[in-house]
Length: 150
Image 1 (tube, rainbow, N blue to C red):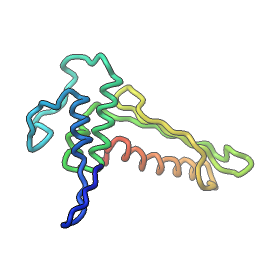
Image 2: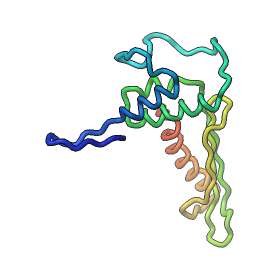
Image 3: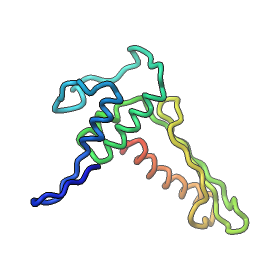
Image 4: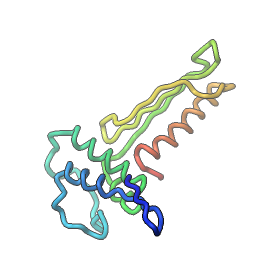
């Protein structure tokens, strides 16, 4: 983000980030449009296969970061292959401090894009509470990572 302080106040822009992202995606010469999505069209599996999935994941991740601060493009950015996620937690995995350990992973299509495993902050009184704690943390981070709200 770029901050500019003027006599009328402070303005925040992401122009340089967007230009760099468009250059990375070879779209810097594309014509601007009022909306990044074409109305009434849905994505499908037809088309050319991508040869460099790393570049695709990188660009999608960069657009997702941009969409967090730009709700006007959030819908268009999040029209991609389905996301799935899984979470799990143990109960009292650490016998010294009685904390459980939990983790989760997020898939974009069949590709793992994010995962985490760490000790929970609080002590759970049951395995069910430990699982619910992990699921709550997982859902919050899933929304942040993927941009999905529903």
